[in-house]
Image (cartoon, rainbow, N blue to C red; front, side, top):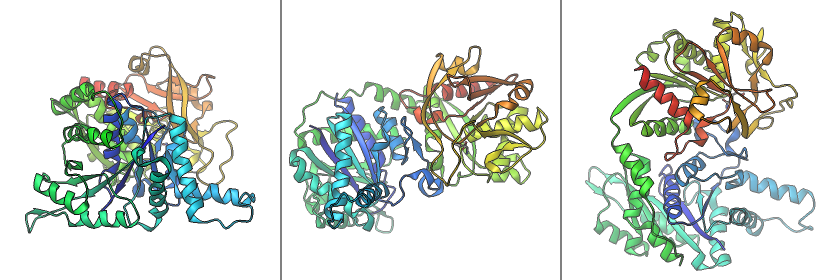
Length: 530
Ligand code: GLN
């Protein structure tokens, strides 16, 4: 029987609840427990697949093709476990399933209500992840902050779970902000008190409070929070800003968060084995070199839009003792005619994306990298832009483009044969992990050292094989194909220090303790050439 830890947030959003959940999950796993995680998102969308990354950050793709909240990326990276699409629940999904049942007459004429129907559906989703994963501990993060109207059914569902599974199998952690008021030169606990009051008013009494703050939360403050919020003093866990998110689990271990959680859940586990994580943090603190990588995209005003790419670059840097300084470059700025913003970069990465805005700028970035022999990594749309660039400027196919952006003379990027017709957004994409055969004598083979790999996809369009010969004549090397040989998964450029484009998105599989081979190879190439 699984135990459940529910993590809620108060005071403000963006407190790093996801990192708290991921860090605690990592600590529990290091003690030999099997851990799984769910994120409950109270918004009405079915999933973030059709939401703008500028509003919601990146869409994280799971092995089974779920288009999920970016927090699932944190969970996978910290806990080093693959999650599934079932691990991300939205209000939209819950209502969709209830209304489909209702249309089929499955409520036998009864009135369909938030309590019990919506709350039951939420609990069923949580319990089904527990059952599928067989985990000892299920961590459940509730998106948003306590008091949000749309979050209420989720809070009610997790309140009921304490009765359903028993008090010893349920634990509530509330993450709050302790703001520093400069004028008073003081950290203030009042917002936390109010937010805990709000939580209690809906029937949830937190067992642990995690206090996010810029400054050290002193013993006195912890005692005050404990008193006013009616919890044990040791269960007030400080979470002060640290240099790297990967330090957070170690800070929690120091505050005994894992011990406290286990005691409260009456769970026995081995002592934490933090050797690998200590080494990771030591390597992050000891980075001795530095390289500059430009990320050319259209959502760069919100770097969370490319969170997994940024983390993957950092992971590869950690493995190579190198700080990877990220330069965020707005693709449309390049279109204004100056490539000044690319000057001085040691490497260029064009990540995935959708739609035509900024595409010409991304194509210019690929050209700049090719001509100046700067290591270049094109991912999904980034790979497609590199192909268009090579087609136009090397293969001399004037008017080469992608059918995604309308009709063009040479659709070098197009639908694959037999692709379902696009009807609206959301459907018709190739999603999740697919195998790819890595070809001998390529940079990719040097990186992977494996003939068959599995990578995660999220795209509709492919390299059009009709143009393959022209592209090969222009210097392209096919470095990865689908097992039936039909789909070109990886391209490389001959006579260039490192120019690789992948149709898949390798960033979803990089872990700090196990960085992705292509990202490591990219950073190695950068180090060699600078
Ligand atoms: N828009 C492109 C496609 O659908 C690329 C998608 C992506 O970059 N993930 O094929």
